[in-house]
Amino acid sequence: MAELDPLIRGFYRDRYREDDRLIRSGHGQLEFVRTQELLRRFLPVPPATVLDVGGATGIHAVWLAGDGYAVHLVDPVVEHVERAAAVGGFTASVGDARSLAQETNSFDVTLLLGPLYHLVDGADRAQALSEARRVTRSGGLVVAAGISRYAGLLEYGCSGLLTEENLHLFTDLLATGRHHDDPDGFTNAHFHHVDELRAEFESAGLRDVAVLGVEGPAAPTLDNATPEEVPTLLPAAVAMARVVEADPRMISASFHFLAFGRV
Image (cartoon, rainbow, N blue to C red; front, side):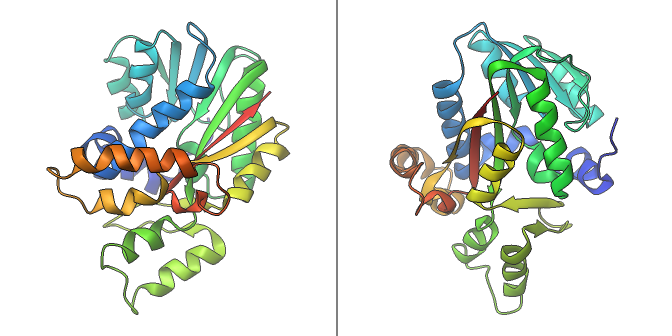
C-alpha cells in the first residue's frame, strides 16, 4: 500500500475527529446536508454498490447504507477503519486511494470525499482518479470532493482573524494551492480551483464532468454562528447554495466542491 503522509495520519488519529466536523458546527451541518443532497441527486438508485474511499469512520457510509446502498469503506487510517467496522450496515478495510485492492469494474459508484485534497502531488491525485475509474463499472459514477482555493481566505477574512502578519499564508496558498500542516489547524492539503478539479477528472478519462459548489456563500456565516442561531440560519443557507451551485461566478465561494464524472 502507498505510504500515507505521517502528518496527515497523525492529524486524523490524534488531533481531529472527522465525523464530528459535520455535526458539531453550523458550517459542518451545511456541508453535510448539501453533500447528502447532491449525492442523492446523482447516485443511481439503491441497491447500487458504493466504494467509499477515504471514508474515515463512516459518516457518509452510514446514511448511504441506510438508503439501501451496498457500501464498502476504505481508509488508510487503521483507527478510522476499526471504528467504521464497528458501526455495522457496511463493510470496511484499510486501503489507499492510489492503490485500491478492489477488482476492476466492481462498483457502480466510487466516492473520493477526502483523498484528493490530501494528495498534494498532482501525480498522486491522477493515480487516485485512475484507480477510482478502474474499479468503477462502465457507465458508473466517480465523485470527488475538493477544497476551494479561497476557503482559508474566506474563513479568516470573515472571522476577523485575517491580519497583515498572516495574509501572506493565504496569498501563497492562492498562488500554489498548497496548505502546509498547522499544529493548531488543518494538515497538509491541496486546495483546488474549479477548473483545475474539472481538468483532473477529464484527464482521468471521465466524461460528462460537472463540478458544483457545496456550501455556497453562507459558510462563513454558519462558521461564526452560535449553536442557537444555526437552526434559523441553515435553511436559508441551503436554499442559497442550491441557487448558485453551478454559477461559475459563485462556485468558488463554497468552501468545498463536488466533482461528478461518468466512466
